[in-house]
Amino acid sequence: MIKKILLFTYPFLIIFLFLYSLTQIDLNLFLFKFDAWVNFQRFFQNIGYFQRPLSAYIYISILILLFVSYIGFLYLVQKNKIKQSEIWKLIIFSAVLLTFSYNAFSYDLFNYIFDAKIITHYGQNPYFHRALDFPGDPMLNFMHWTHRTYPYGPSWLALTIPLSFFGFNFFLPTILMFKALAASCFLGTAYFIGKILDKTDKKNKLFGLAFFALNPLVLMEGLVSAHLDIVMAFFGVWAFYLLFNKKYIASLLSLIFSAGIKFVTVVLLPLFLFRIFSVSKKKLSFEKISIVSVLLMTIAIVASSLRTNFQPWYLLYALPYVSFISRRYYVFIPSVVLSFSSLLIYIPYLYSGNWDPPIPTILFWITALGILSSILIVSIRYKMVK
Image: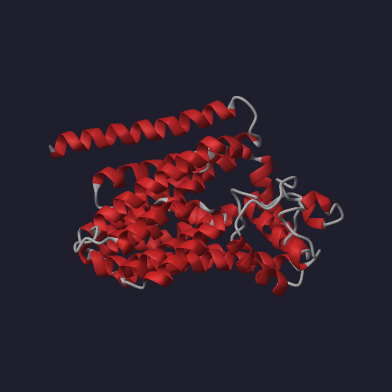
């Protein structure tokens, strides 16, 4: 009964998430300009911008239902009551539909597009030029962070310049190609997680796959907002796959390419080198490497948060590697609790329409309570196990 309910309702939740993303379309942006679409878009924008309490309540409802479904699917996997093919159908459906969603929770996607556009359209270097240097560009009407220069690595430009070039400076096809890149890397990450676990921990393969690919935070930050972190994660996980298949040169190249997107995965390089060049007959076990990887990526999350502020998509640094050991309660509980609490960060903005005080204080306490709740629940679970 639980399985039938979840399999029936989950696609509708993804559809609701897709529709909700339309409520956040910038008021200065029209994806299409024919009357039927304009009226359709304005209906959703009216909810997002002019009925903010309703918008916040809808978001909370979708968020809670997604996490209830997420826990339900993990329960079914644990009890061997759901097939791998059924999980993959849900994953693929989510990836395809959310490719067409609006990047509701972040404007970063527009910056990615403009960074590549500086090269393909304006013939300038984005490391030295910013969006504000091109005041006549129509994208400036709905962009944020127009004052910053390009902050990422060359690998991201290598991936995005072709997309910008073949977009021919048309906004809609370009944004769809960027979203498709994120969706492809999401599917690729899920695929390699399954392949790695099939080789190293076959009994928990499906749990690790579902743990990552059905996580609402991964769906929202990796597919809806299409943060480049999901692309970085793909090449990092691919590097793991190559490492455990003893394709060491290809593994290092993939890891370096991943680090060339956002630099974060460079923290894994010493671990890879130790695994490759270890003179010990018995290499580090997969579980130990996974635990160390999670610890290193957690440090990267903390460092990034201290440098600026904590952002929900930072969890994409660690979640792919957590999936390798997700059956361990001491990583499973914090991952789920923090995924949920991190997505609560958007509620004050959705409700009020700004980030002004006292919202920063509220966000601090949301994050702090998420961390404290994780520690408390893990401690209780530890006492029970002991």
